[in-house]
Length: 635
Image (cartoon, rainbow, N blue to C red; front, side, top):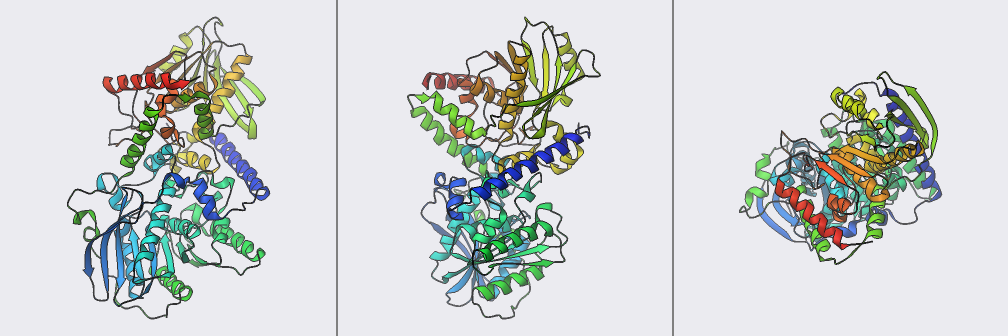
């Protein structure tokens, strides 16, 4: 149940995030990047793992309007990954300037009203316009159905070492390749436009691909700091991004090409409000001027909400005409809405083709990883543990600066507050007991507040010591503020995204917290220690034991035996966003964690990542694969 009891912890969390951001800001000043933004993005997003395939295009239909044609087609991005698209072609011979028109999170994907309206305005002004469905959106949802591509679904891509931002970027790179391959397109006059999530795509592809000479990013520019502890989509997440750059670095890097920012004075998304946009703009402009150049970034503020209005579209057209050398001419014709069904690519195919959704893509990549693991005769334990440590981004600073103990309202329980690095406080409840019995360290996935009275009574009955702990962010997550922030999204959505921007992981923070508390208990001469956890914290317990081997036994309830994404339905209770660990699936998944651990582990009610109970066969298959992996691991 959501309460406001953790409001002090929420304030502490905000202070901690601000502190971490400031540290990274100093780091960026001292280690200014010498490499290009394109090279930096290639490295951060690990784009070598998602190479582009040869450009293959299949034209499905041409719809002829009075002064332009709409061509429906598919084209290949990665090997076996085909993108549904609509290409708007002006009447005449060309060559024409061309615009990549990216959609945001409004309904319809490439066939949404805003996208259609913008495309028609541009094509009537003499531009070729390419509109594609972004990864996981429009026709590219699971089983070809439209769905929200973010949340757990988008975050699951982290497990195979990529991200939603990375896949959108390479899709858009191939879209530019497509435009440049067309004989009726002037490849020296390419632009990009998009609003909201589409504006985010526009900014990244423009920074990455110098063939784009002018870009308009609409209601989508602010500082990257503005993303922290906010609910923005994971498609707007650059893992480790704040360790090397801020939004002003991306904006300023685009020069001497041009970028125009359209913002809304009534913006309701905090990350894109005028104050955030103006800070990014002014810092980018100052950086361009300091480097001896003229400013190539500009902006215009509209008395609008979060929208891409007709007035904004006209401003974008005027900007493109000026920067791409197109004569201004009043465009003719009112918006002529085409039914989204008429713009679908899959409807024109024979049923043998369906765009690859996120779940199927992750499964395909995971199958490749499993094939690799099966082919290996030996696996280096040291290398596996090093890779796990890096994926979790664990903070090894375990110093406890202050301990405050008070007796709680529940008889026999002592409240301990441990002040650690960054002024953060770890909270625990401790019941002393017979030192000859194992001490039970309990890490509830819902925090101490989620433990029922019946469970507390059972802990009291146990004659040994019992310790309950709240891991990083749990108390803050229980506030009304975070409930509103993550409404309709997985729990820990905003906090997990924040940590990933900062170069950390929530699971890694939990592992560090377990280690701090275990060391604290060792100092109190509580041994041996039995670690109890459930669901997401059960995964953190496995990670902890695999790396540090300091618990004597584990008891895990509802442990997911794999972090592979599953198709969820209305009765599902999927894992929250503490679960994503970069590269964990390719590394070996939960099976590898289990194979690295020698102490006794009791697993009750195992589940999959959607929260579904597993069959006996699935449990047996897991045990068999763990046995195979254990035999491969060289100590």
